[in-house]
Length: 454
Ligand SMILES: Cc1cc2nc3c(=O)[nH]c(=O)nc-3n(C[C@H](O)[C@H](O)[C@H](O)COP(=O)(O)OP(=O)(O)OC[C@H]3O[C@@H](n4cnc5c(N)ncnc54)[C@H](O)[C@@H]3O)c2cc1C
Image 1 (tube, rainbow, N blue to C red):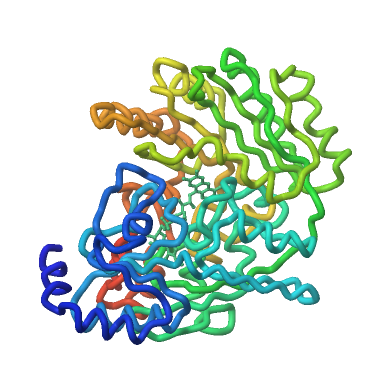
Image 2 (image 1 turned 135 degrees about the horizontal axis):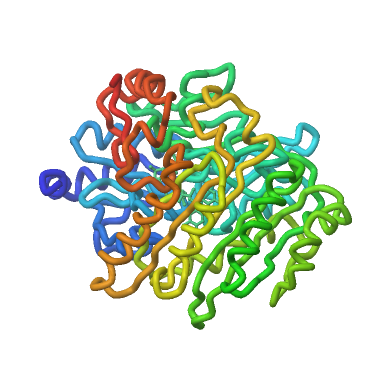
């Protein structure tokens, strides 16, 4: 790492200036205007210093940076929305390829296709397509980058009705490790297209996506809040309703202690069919008597920002995100025990449903292997004081013991040191072969790294 910094220094102003002259985007040196903002990501635990930041403006800029990095033996890292808790986006002494200026969006209303720049955040993307009465799935937080969300698969509130984020991807523009700009789709570089739908950022830098859009004027969404003391009853109700729900209903449930000290169970449902039918399906929760009920008809862009309050900036973070086959009573009780005030250290446990269209795709059809699972459990630990770090990490990791009997594996977008076999399942060997074909020198290794060919 020190070596690459020295090389940048040895290259000196002239080489960096020459790079800069070849680019449409901005080159920022350490200490320059915008440098600290560019290296800042959601997880405040990550405090790293790139040798250079390049805010690219198009795929050709990315290609130039990759060729420059290759020529001078400098590492690269890739940042879209900066939401990745593992912090892969920022690497000490590397060139940071910052995609945040790639915010273009075009909507073809007739074909119902959106072409979106990889620097858009989920909320920006969905608000732009929604202006045409059309949407495609995103996650549950508006500030998550579209870039990283797609790379991992993309869980979201439309997974029952329209599948994962990647199930709606028609094509991508991607810059490979040798600086080539390719299009990947079912018919163009199909292996690459298969791999980028769940294989993490291992195969190149995606600069633009094309998504299939669907008409969706509004959804029934929002949040109902119950006191934590009623968790045993509410989580069971959640499971029972989820297991008989139609594709249109996808729900998440969070157990958390809020900054004001109140411990809650938060139900976050999204129903994407007729509003009256959604009201009928959710009536048992209303009858259970929430202390606050904010579930109402709303635009999908609003419903898909439900998790925003759970991700305030400035906190140090650690997470586990595991997929589960089922949610039996013993797992429910174990998760409630972990989320109980006093045990939880103020952290969040989220139980997400994976249903409908997302689960009807063959696990080998895209790189995302978790299709036969029905739930995901996310344990997100957040703290401010470094002295609290070890206890918080241990808390998040302890959730694994509770779910062990039902566990399939770990979600690539949240994996911090989980074995690759748990992240990619049976898709690993094909991913390794695609990696060998497109990135044989492992240029893109700041990620959940797939070894070329192995
Ligand atoms: C509050 C919160 C809510 C979340 N909700 C959801 C959810 O509902 N569903 C879900 O599936 N996930 C969710 N996640 C996880 C999310 O998918 C990952 O954190 C994802 O990596 C974020 O993408 P990003 O672009 O913001 O991340 P970044 O930190 O910018 O990128 C993470 C890594 O992804 C790779 N990458 C990013 N963009 C590109 C690109 N264009 N080309 C190549 N590689 C790239 C790189 O390796 C990069 O280091 C959530 C995370 C948080 C913190």
